[in-house]
Image (cartoon, rainbow, N blue to C red; front, side, top):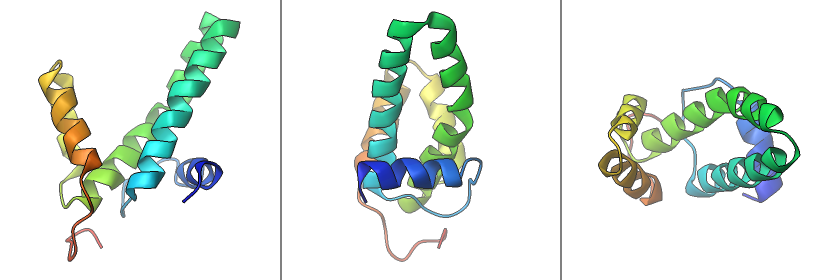
Length: 105
């Protein structure tokens, strides 16, 4: 999956928490959010906040689908609320290969 395809898929599945997301889909989306957020913040802090708010739901959805690919519930995203340790655990899970067979399809 390419950078542009990943962005299109994530916006097409804006609030779709079902199914699975491949590693490239998730990480290209993450890179897009990071780069676009930085570029927009240079222009305007208010636009940056609006961009972050507008991409929050698809970011949560793609992370849930990524966790589904590793055979975990999307609710495990809540572990990210634990500073540092939770973030590290989420990153490790998102880096792992998808599991087959899988209860999420």
